Length: 164
Image (cartoon, rainbow, N blue to C red; front, side):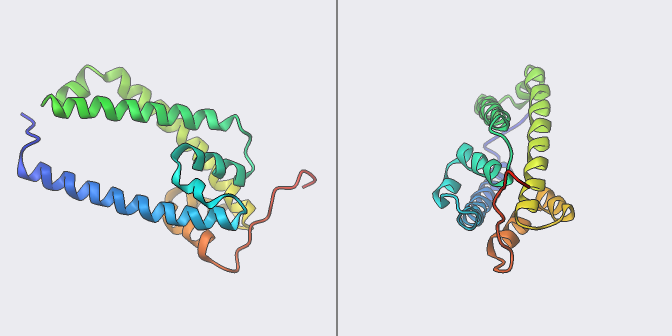
């Protein structure tokens, strides 16, 4: 049976939470400088859904893509609540058994989010004068390639033009 009070579980949870906090801090710092470089409000990096809106704006995508982001965040929040409930009730098998539909929906929404992120990656690469190969790097190694865009002084943001 799953035991959330077990020492190994606590250690894994602690290490995982530390990793998530450090990753989030690094991601926010990179986004802060990237948004500033693109002429957007840097504080937008601190607000979860709004930062994706700014990414879409920088990448030159239409506003209706934001619907995909909102659906993804809402579903992710729902999934976390169900998972925490399963852990607290000491029945992790409940999460995987009775919530099969939730897990299937999460796959669909996650796929939708990856499609959105692919479009954003290509748009970001183009707006900063990079090629599609750089977009692949943004897609798979987010903090490294966004960090290159944010901190490389030779890379400039090229605003979207209706004529181009």
